[in-house]
Image 1: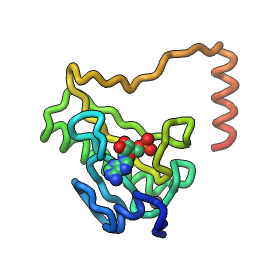
Image 2: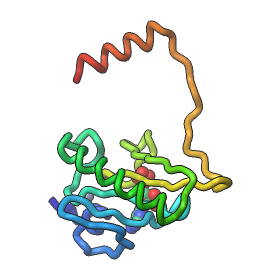
Image 3: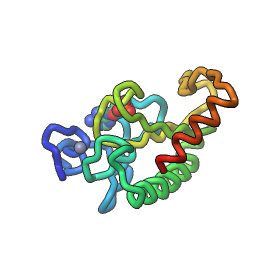
Image 4: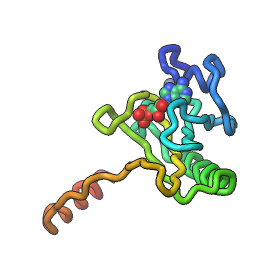
Length: 138
Ligand code: AMP
Ligand code: ZN
């Protein structure tokens, strides 16, 4: 369902131009307008879903298969040294466009980017309780 106020719905519908790598019935893969590194791309489902919490598992399966294809093509085309997959959900997590998108960010020696988090701490008991709480909701 196209949302006129959503920039990625409008890109998926072809109403706003984008530099497209790939497109099929379900997804469009475009170059990020403000790339973190050369080749930074976004996989965007054509159907509007705000974030991962609105995505069904069937779509998720297709999405990750496509991510693997694009990542391997990036490796060959760009000769990157590594690649980060980033996917932000919610403002607190850094999501600025509220239409699901998966970032594929090729990495190069000396590219100056830092996409990692600061390691924290949790007791054995806390980890066990947290794991159990999540498992119960699956
Ligand atoms: P996020 O912060 O995870 O929501 O990422 C949003 C991403 O969308 C950013 O990397 C932006 O540079 C990118 N972006 C925003 N508008 C456009 C656009 N019109 N075409 C391509 N990328 C865009
Ligand atoms: Zn949308």
